[in-house]
Image (cartoon, rainbow, N blue to C red; front, side, top):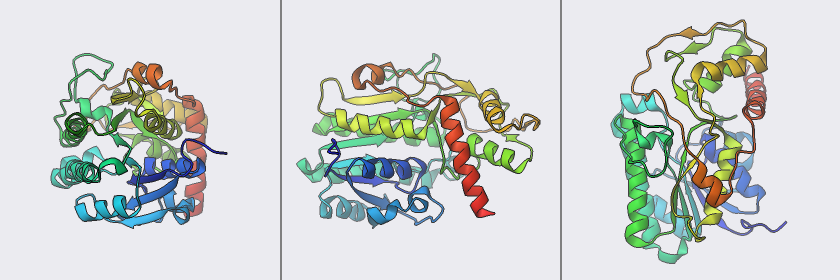
Length: 326
């Protein structure tokens, strides 16, 4: 079936990450030719486990290497870019801000400068920002009109990358849009410090669930397939009236950490596991959630998965993954 994506030559940075792995699959299923920009070949990544790496052109390199990015774009005549690659862990950013700034900030301006110099070759660019780019705000939910004021290292890296993307769009008229999502969950996230994969693993192993915060931190939780759909709809909309700048993507149903844990426990039948509340989270904003009405109106985007549906698929992914690993 011919789709918008049939024959498009799409570069995905961070193709081995959580979002990248699933986005590559969605693009390939829609007929795109995918060029995957990969730093490390992680065999546990869904990108490799799904076998989709065999259907892509892989360019190895780091975001800090301008020449590697230019080679990926130019030699593969890329017309669409999804920039997902980043150091994504709040705790890692707090421990080593230099690595995070190099990857998330320098990597973004390297890529955008490559796109600028290649002129009309690149026709659409989607930059993966985050709700963390807003920093702590006195009023919620976040709207796209709010200032970006990250304070902790990870937040600052996302604020800066977001602002750099806005600068390139404003100053050079480049076809750039920015996606700001809430907390993304789904199969393939092997950062066990995150609440969804760690809770599922604890339930599967029948061991205590550990919560680093006091359990009352509030977040949007958005399923990975809804995120991929959002990114693709955002790219498809570039050039249409109003589809410029940043867009929030979230389910508009914020939950506390304890509510998310309880939802997983209910689906897995492990309500008997009482969470251990460590209350030692550092460098994290207490309450964050998004107003996604702009995406609803201009992109006609909606989450297609309920929390129960998204978690059910996620649990099954981890069940199969951990059974295979044991």
